[in-house]
Length: 462
Ligand code: FAD
Ligand code: 2HG
Ligand code: ZN
Image (cartoon, rainbow, N blue to C red; front, side, top):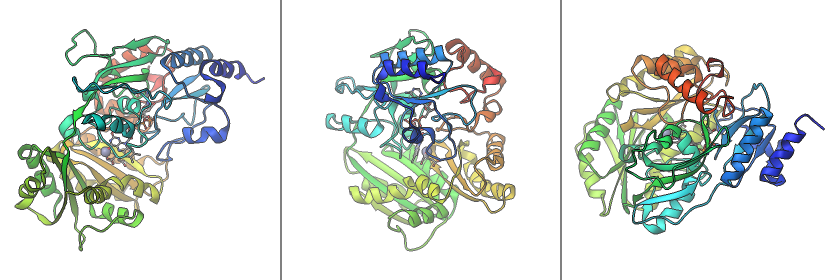
């Protein structure tokens, strides 16, 4: 008998023995994050299938003094979905992947109700036959779950039109640290009945509750699409063009920026065709959609744009996918080079080009020999900075880039969250008053600091 045997038996009674994983070989994929930069050991991985089972698991963890690490698809990029490397007591990963009920789409209202463990791709497939899609889309769609996307307030490629996850949330169900269930289902668009708990839990990164179900706004499919890839000489021209198109082209659905070094890396690692005969400093990928074919509108909108050296446009599905691959494959191409330092920041749009120019210089000055890749969602002022070179636990380049971000009036987390990676930077970004209000909320809802300790807020400062 180990000291934890009785606790494990309680967990087995709650979810069934086959859904309490204690074998290291079965636990390992839940213990390491997507980036391979963060890992820790769990006493067990528990896989509840219902809200009642989640409640039973949280009550058992509270009684045993175990930390709970909520986990969806484990595609998070800030170390928040896996156990901490150093922990005071036992850690239990609560995987939501079995919470995957879907209810029929409410086509009249344009709404859907799904379990937290449903993946984004499964939600999209569920909505498609009813003529709808979801307002948030991102490259990790096959694995990322709706619960994880709410918990991180995920952004992705369509924020310029539909906003982030928080903007899609009508209601949700979640289990609190004391086993209580907050449930505002179905939830309504107009609902001024006090604190909006779905908004509070969006971006809470597993620190306030385990989300079990969500009631989501969905949007009609705009079936005709065109994607253009523009090659540009100057970053500033790409930023200005994206800003102009956002105002002048209502069909604009996505605007993504990336650069020559990232493009070459994707071409090297993925089986993707080179789009232009020559290399160019910057690339702007634009997607337009509508009920009618938007190809001409898109082509006209960029025809006389300043600084465009070359362009391709695709209206067929395979052609569009080829162009999107050049952007969406950046994350895995960089990961194939090594364990990357990842920063996900927002800058005021007017300073984005300056930031993009300064970052590689700063990184090289901080850790000579490092290689920097930048890419992101240009209309949101959101750049992803991937740095290869420094050891995973060497924070110098992360600190330098985040310091620059704050100096330039930006945010240290645009869409991936604070996680375990950026806890030290929260106060510098949000200020003392904001962080102490967050701590007060945390203390009120999770006084034992059981839910995802070490993520978002420092426990010692509780
Ligand atoms: P996980 O990684 O499992 O967890 C993330 C956080 O949410 C953790 O803190 C976890 O504790 C918490 N959590 C998970 N489920 C729950 C729950 N049910 N209740 C409470 N807390 C929970 N992100 C973007 O915003 N935009 C992008 O464009 C984007 N593209 C990506 C592309 C790739 C290739 C990859 C690998 C990642 C990308 N991401 C992107 C990051 C990631 O996909 C998102 O953060 C996503 O929202 C995480 O969902 P998940 O289910 O994998 O959550
Ligand atoms: C994207 O926009 C994702 O591709 C992932 O947010 C970014 O690799 C990253 O850091
Ligand atoms: Zn992104």
